[in-house]
Amino acid sequence: MLSLTQAFDKLLATVSPLEAVSLPLADVLGMTLAEDVSAPEDSPPFDKSLMDGFAVRADDVAGGFASLRVIEIVTAGRVPLKAVGPGEATQIMTGAPIPDGADLVVKIEETLPDIDSVHVTTKSITPGTNIVRRGTSVRAGDVVLKAGMKLNGSRIGALAELGRAVVSVHRRPTVAVLATGDELVPIGQRPGPGQIRNSNEAMLVALLQAAGAVLVSLGIARDNRADLKAKIQEGLQCDMLVLSGGVSAGTLDLVPSELAEAGVREVFHKVELKPGKPVWFGVRAGFPSGGRESPGSSISRVAEEPGDSRPPRGESVYVFGLPGNPVSSLVCCELFVRTAIRRLMGEQPPMPRPIPARLEHDYSARADRPTYHPAKLMWSPEGATVKLVPWHGSSDLCGTVAANGMAFLSGEAKEYRAGEMLDVIPW
Ligand code: AMP
Ligand code: MG
Image (cartoon, rainbow, N blue to C red):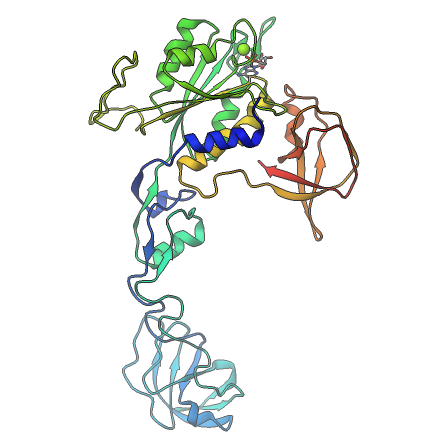
């Protein structure tokens, strides 16, 4: 059986970023830049005032005191028309350009206005005080944002400052979610004997939306080959298909063999992990757009015609078969599916980023495999702390609602002591 590290290695060796698309800034939150972006001009574009006050000549205030003739008022958005000569001052607002001749701004709190003049008393007499020079932040041509950066508010703001209304980003993957199982009923329906509600579909859709994917919900496939075949074909129209259930060793666990039938090559099946051991991952290699299916293949991919309502496709389709137990599905989605989505969207690094946190209590671990245990991550003045929440195993989804992440336990029988550090992956 693969170790977690081996599984991640295989995953990352298989998945490559999707192609770039150009999108307006309003649509790129959480996406990753696919181009370097440089400054079209110096920023700030002119020497500007950091304060409301008076632009003066440093020589005039060298003694710390001066009475100066006010020759002009410049508000932000206007430009000074007059140069400041000896014995003169221009009243200036934050952000306004510094007039020629002036090399220091005395803030308003250090001045006393008179009829046509201003009395200045200040200790800040060094030339350049309260002035931010042209190009201090960036020079024209400097690369400010690099390909691979994930776009958040500050970076989108910087793109706007650089005049980029449209930028190149890796497109979002389309992901189909398919629950499998004869026992499943839609969530609006009361389960009969032997039946349960299909909770995985809603959960996986939510997790994958949060990851930035565009979702296609395929509902429930029954545990028979005809139904699975048809719905798997639908799912393979997307960039990724995520199935839940049917990947273990039961007689009706038909998912791996049906995926093989559909031309999906297994990359791994089963990982040394708790919960989630039976997880399955594979890929169906595509062909360049406009190309042909390789000879001998039974699969025909429908060409994307203009006006085609199907979601856009990359060249390969990635397929995950997650174990049906809800917490197994949750853990495998957080570990593997989200990592694949980060990779498709060009995010660096794509791996989950655990937060080291101090365990708040003793814990006696009996697991025989590396385990992700639902956990509550908290912040204290001394740093992150974590509590393992009471939890009854892979079917106990309600037990996870008190958690906001999952803590890694190494898999040996071990007495953890309060104060030990654990790695926690936040949800
Ligand atoms: P399986 O992986 O198909 O063997 O399913 C393992 C367990 O997970 C069984 O108890 C299933 O009833 C349960 N299960 C499977 N699919 C779902 C689902 N979509 N929602 C909730 N539970 C499920
Ligand atoms: Mg099943």
